[in-house]
Length: 608
Ligand code: FES
Image 1: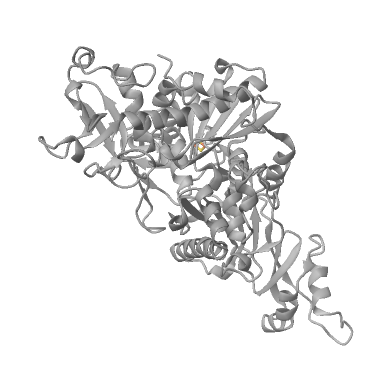
Image 2: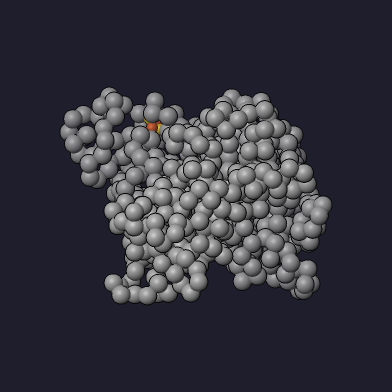
């Protein structure tokens, strides 16, 4: 999807989102603000954008736009789905919002922890010799902030240089700075999704509640291992590794902060708060806390919520008193990123039966029946990240992400370049499509060579061997390329995916049973995370990764950890909601259940 915002406000941006995501969400997730007061529900008629090319017209569009505007491509952004590459013009905001739309259609009333108050103070005199700080605090006595030393050091000079016309900066209940003149409109924060693989930073304008810039990069801890277990093991083998991992995480956060501030043309000193949503291991490592107890039974965290952390403690050069708010974690394997995801998807606010799945090496699963919320973690292994897959790769240029089988093989490739390998969503698609056309049987085995031509004549010649192993050729670089030079799906790859999906489906099956529910009772499935969001709902249903439900009930939720972090910065009420989740959610340990293995084996097949 290509979003082309107003060139005066920012340059042209190209972003990639899961297919079917509304343009409104696609923009919001990528730091592009679109007018709205309804939160993307199609009722405020404010989210006007111009879409190039033919786009369906809804009845809401007809009510909102003139015939000429409709012909010119004007549509309501929350009602346009990105099912193909789109070029979209986004006009600048026309209203000063009181609320922001974040997460999955969540409308957040702006109430950030960062407050600014402009005051014009009476100058001292022999008749009024109150201390400077008392003079300032009296003017903002409704906020009752506690001044810190940083303020006291600056106060006498700033007050006199600015003729006693200053802006007080309050974060939570602390008076952290005093700035000359009226700077009430200048207040920013950075929301981080601190992933094991990828880290995403969003710079937020707290006065408007809008994203200013977004940047992402691979976590610099990658060289120490691809998943949390290898990184924990690395610290156990060499005591020098922990400080190096901490330094790598800090460097990642700092580089992203510099990028978003540069792109948003914001002075880093005006960033007063940071929120971090990360799993328990990433949180421990960025703080330099020994992660070993997280990696060995009984899997214990040093703290479920680190308190009183300053940005400087994690190597960030922002406002010198900027705070870091970490999301609370439910357990060693259901961390702050998942609590942030629950906040962003409103798992605690919805009366429907909902299933939340964050697909990854460690897959987190949450089920709510509108009353109780249960969570668990399932070790899915590296298949979704392309690990242990013959032609597996990350979702980067050249990765096959969509596979359709019919009379031929149709592939969707990231970056529209020559296919180089298969990423997680492509793997799920490939297996689901092979099962659909009948080349994989219900147990996940390729059908015998002799049967393939009758089952799928147009595809049978793609079923071949590399050595002893049977493979299906997805892409041949040229007509006579031997299978070794092709992008293939192997029998072992299918097995890897079966193990991964069985771990996940065993998890949600057992959680549903705990709540006395069946698969068909689930009213919405939220597929979250950088892998889950891109998996085709139809393929996920076909292989049994999610319950067998109509695909419309399966929703791509996007980067919900980052969205939750944004919510925490925009509203202290939402932040309190995240903390309340610690009490509301019950963690269910599955690994010690006697029936786990039997259930796992039941889930291995594709169910016909
Ligand atoms: Fe309100 Fe689209 S966001 S109508």
